[in-house]
Image 1: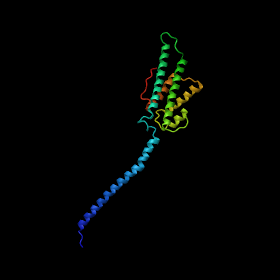
Image 2: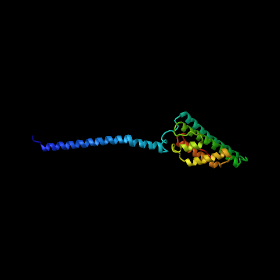
Image 3: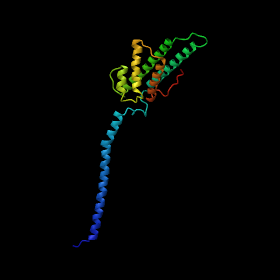
Image 4: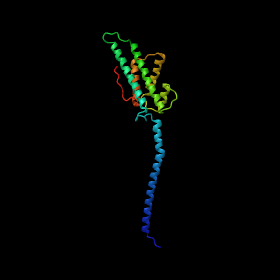
Length: 205
C-alpha cells in the first residue's frame, strides 16, 4: 500500500490545528471555572468584609418605618437647635438684657445630647438588621463594633465627641456652644453618608 505523503502531512496539520483549538477551548473553560469558583468569591469576600465603604451605594437601614422615624428625630434635633438659637438671639435684642454666656452653652449642650440619642438609635437599628454584630447596647460598644462595617466619614471626631457627651451627661460639664455645633454637624455628616438622613439641614447661628 502506498501513502500520499502530501495528504498525510495535510491531515497532520489539521489534527494539530484541531488539537490547538481544543486546548484553547479547554484553557478558556478551566480558566473561567477557576475565576468563577476561586477568584470571584475571594474578591467578593474582600469587598464585603474589609471595605468600610461597601454600603455606600445603597440605603443602609432597610426598615422604611424606622428610617423615617430616625429622619424625623434628626429633623427635630435641627429644629430644636434653630429655635433655641433664635430665642437666644431675640433675648439679646430690642434692649433686652440677654441670656448669659453659660445659659447659651447649656441650651446647646441639651441639643447635643439629643443628637447623640439619634446616633445611638441608628446604630442599634443597623445592629438589629445584622449590618454588624454587638450584644451590648452602649454607644461606645456600638460605635467600635460598627467601625469596619459601615462607612464612617470621621470616626475619630465622633468618638472623641462621645467622650465629651459623657462628661456633659454624667459630670455636668458644659461644652462651648461652638463645639456643640461642630459635633452635631459631624453626626449629621455620618447620617447623611449612611443615607439614613436624606440631606443636610442648614442651621443659622
